[in-house]
Length: 399
Image 1 (cartoon, one colour):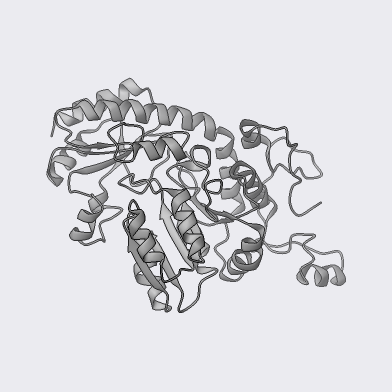
Image 2: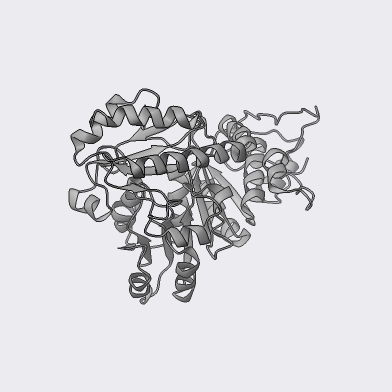
């Protein structure tokens, strides 16, 4: 059996690839993908083991390096993304860290957009500088700020678009050109857009990362992360880093993520529809002073979103009144929408970024990112939209 599945027919369209891409059946010819819950593999001879560890690439040797179930998940997502190569990790943050750490060294510069998830900011501001890496944060919406920051040269650029939680959009194509002119590689965290709503590689990015925990699983079951890029990047940098540092994805979790990919398009269509309905409801509500959603013409970068995204996503951000107490009153009054810091789930979830995902940031930093004490982030699920708006309406009455 080949170590990686053969590519599907080129005639297969994306919807078919999400269900059949990467499938490799064992000798039992099972319908569903097999879960290979094994740490290691055996050899018919000592010579075969020697050849395997010499790196002939013809077989699996250890599940920390590669595993048949994980390989099927990687191949399916690679096909959906349109990348040359893909590697999975145990979590989204493992993917983010590995995507950058695998190819930088002391003395290198990393430039990133300021609007990032809290743990991403910790990596950039706390961890990388300990190892002699210079990190610079800029306003991701300001191309002049990018030009100035990249002028001295750069090794890696990291962005989220849309960002967490403020839904800021970065002009990926423009930043990719500036990054390449400065000698660096552009890494895009595409988790809010998913591989179906935005194609960073087609816009000029070099590397794409996901928390597969979010929309790819989409049902609150599994942690997982993914890094996609060129074969050269994966072979020379990412694969050795993952092999020797060990953030391996469990085969069982890989199987759950494979199942998640099968329904991703169906779930995403409903979630985006619900997000649009909820955003328009909130924008008109008298107790909501600000609503952010890339699909609303009132979004500051609406035109850019229409240009580089095929859908506006599943996340809506709004201010519930004016204070933290107002936001808490609303969240505590919700009956259908659950309070959780996760997102991308089939169930609608609400969180208060200032006291959860971005609570470690100083107040002045949160203010720069537009994270007010009244800000609430909602990840829309697949429920009936009328039930969602009714739940929000009764909760807003408590504000």
